[in-house]
Length: 249
Image 1 (cartoon, rainbow, N blue to C red):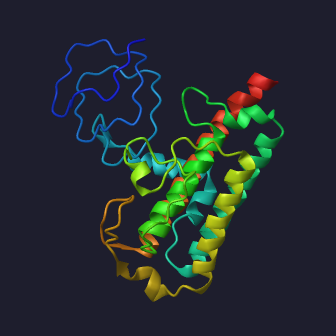
Image 2: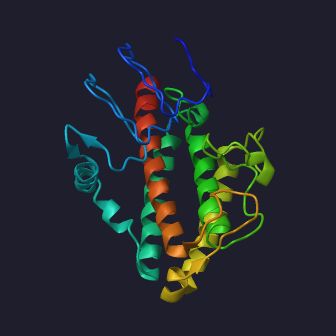
Image 3: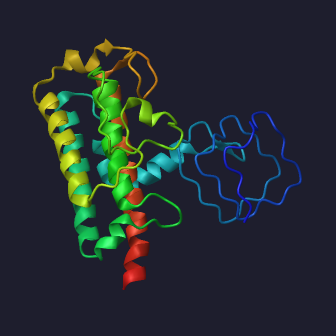
């Protein structure tokens, strides 16, 4: 299979009369894409999708409603107060602990095994550490050096080493879980005493090297990003665990 990885910029390009069936698009920016007369049978899409119209119908509200029906815990992942923020963290931790227990019955190697070129469970957990460091430590708490070396940034974050990420790190599952427990304990400590005014206060930007890019944000917005990202990655992990369970059956 031909691979096109970090090729020249295709922004504004036109792709006409091309056979692209069974193609894979990973970490590809398709914002403002226009598709006309396409054949899209048996496709599988996940990502940050907003404003997508298919045959004249905006699909996000339909997808969101169906996801809420399938996963009612999502309704608790839209915090607006200190109390609901604490509850949202509880939801994430309950789901993640169940996922780790599910993985614990598989051979140890399964935790480090990739499925369909996606992150392994270990890498997913390391990314979840990075997300807390980025959106709480960096964006909300405005710390200058919040990033743990074992965190795994998204692939589009190309300068992770500049803010302390060790790309050669190979921690054990126990080490990963210990670091993540520390991050969640830190977040819980903040939420245990935070006021509504503090959650709603616009702070920043944090000009220290890091992720996300400098911008003014409320702590509440940052917490919403954290819990929704963590929920999504738990879903990805369980999707891949289902495949691994069949492989080791």
